[in-house]
Amino acid sequence: MKMQTRPRLIIAGTGSGVGKTTLTLGLMAAFSRRNRQVQGFKIGPDYIDPSYHTVVTGRPSRNLDTWMVEPDRMKEIFLKGSEGADLSVIEGVMGLYDGKDPLRDEGSTADIAIRLESPVILVVNIHSMARSAAAVVMGYQNLNDRVPIAGVIVNRAGSEGHYRLAKAAIEQECNIPVVGWLGRDERLQIPERHLGLVPAVERGELNPLFDTLAEVVEKNVDLDQLQALANQAPPLAEPDSALFSLPVREVEEYQPIIAVARDAAFNFYYPENLDLLERMGADLRFFQPLEGEKVPEEADGLMIGGGFPEEFVDRLAREDEVKASIRERIEKGMPAYAECGGYMYLCERMITHTGETYPMVGVIPAVVKMQQRLAALGYREVRALSDTVLLKKGETARGHEFHYSTLDLTLPDPPYAYESQGRRGSHREGYAAGSLLAGYTHLHFASNPSMVQRWMEHCRRYHMFRSD
Image (tube, rainbow, N blue to C red):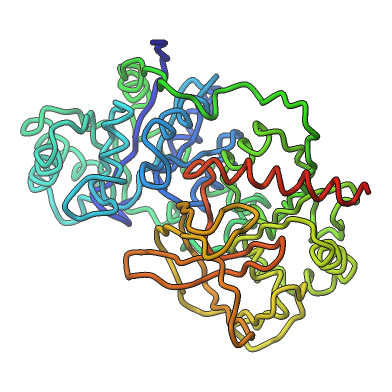
């Protein structure tokens, strides 16, 4: 059994809103200033926070999840993603013990911490408390003593003196170090997260905030002590079975070319999904619909991921040649898969929350309406209602939904793609007709790797059909 050394820390919180993301980004920026190679990870199915990580560290951030994928696959994703890094900083989700089930730790930050044997730094909001902070930390220590809580960072301290009061109490009662603090500094507030914020991050508009975070963390947090705690993480055993660590598959069959839309409007892709496609023999060709790039002529398949087409709806609507290239290829039978933002883009039209209407690609008979509030959020297990380019009828896969729109299919008996099961029950969603599969659910291909192989087969058949 091969062991791998990976210095690592999990930044967990007592709950949502205590400052996990603020501290995570500050730590990433501060360690990067020390010329450390920092690898970011986000626990749970989130695309927005990883986009911050990627900009700050210069390395693609990856998601760690034990519900969408098997625990061994999660560990493999961590080991593969952290190769060559001096430090891995893993941002938790919600509170330390919040996961899929209120009675168990499954899917929680605590679950990941146990499985990765990773030191946990607990972020505690000490606003209006001093000694009571020790009781908070002690409660988190005692709920599950298998969770390796190694240190604390306190947030929202009224002053350095306030910080030292809480530090003394926690260190005396809990026997773990308090390694730093943040004050009530309005400069450190990250704008409220929404889909449209990600392009602003990528354009560099938040770089001054990241610089400020780095400066404050360097001043108030003991980075040397944190690195020492990370270095104490034990070596990890590689999983017995591998999916992402196998060499890229050498196939005698034709390697199908899959066109992948990737630009500011469409960029929500799990790195592992693209990686699996390449490892199974796909030749990925990226194109930018926003920049007027049409589907590459040589493409045998098409993938349009999630993102925020609503932020660029006027530009997308004006690119008539791009829309025509997508529509013509799908109508000629090219295997195509779209999710969330891509699903919306393939519909007939989109209505913004201010009532403006824009024409979209038009291959799915549906109207998309943007909402002011979140329309859907959470894990989903989908069961295929018919044979599709990814799943055979009755097969299942896992993923998540996250969107601010509703979509009305205009057919009297719509060819729904999935029966989708979530926390609030099940419903039919998506669209499957011919060689097109689309839906709101962001699927994680590692939840059912046969999806990738099936798509390859469809693309090869289409290539042969075109060549005849």
